Image (tube, rainbow over all chains, first blue to last red; front, side, top):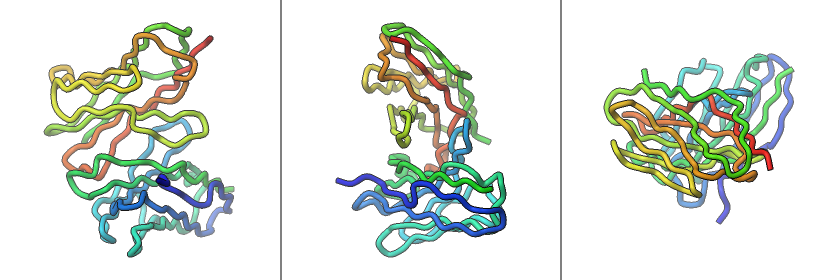
Length: 115
Length: 112
C-alpha cells in the first residue's frame, strides 16, 4: 500500500507570495495533520483535520490555513510568505481523530524555500 | 504547557558501542511517549512508543522505558550499527492526542 504522499517535493517562492501544499493520506485514514520543521529543530504542529473538520490548531498566524476534502486529502495554504516560513512541511495521516490519533504516519515532506 | 527536552547532539559513536539518548518531559496528566527517527532523505518514522508508566517500548534493538517518577524516556541500544545514523526525536501527546510535541532532535553518527 502507498504511504502518505505529498506534493510538490520542493518549492521556491518569493516573499509575499502564496503557496499551496498537498497531501494524500494512507488509504482508509481519515485524519490528516500538518507540521512545520525548521532546519535543525523538531516538527511543530500546525493543524489537524478529521472528517473534514478542524480538530486542532497550533500556535501559527492566520496566514496559515488548511482544509480537508471528501476523499480525505488535504491542502495547507500559506499567504504573504515570510523568509521565516522556509521549512520542511510534513503531513501525517492516522486512522482516526481525537484520542486515538497518536498513530500518525508521516509523509516525506515538502521543502519550501522563501527568498 | 507540555514540552520535551532531549540530549543535544551531534552524538558520534563507533560501531557496536552502547547508545543512550536522554529525554525528559513536562506534561500534565498521562502523556503517551514516542521516539521517532528521521533517516537522511526520508520522512519521520515511528521507532517505538509507550502509553503508560513503566511500559517499555522496543523496536529494531532500541528500547525506552516510560519513567513517570523521573519524567524520562531515554532511548537505548546495546550495539549500534552504521545504519542507525539518523536524527532521533523524542515526542509526546497529551490530552490533545492530535498534537504531537517533539523535542529538538539528536543527530547520531556511527563510525565503522
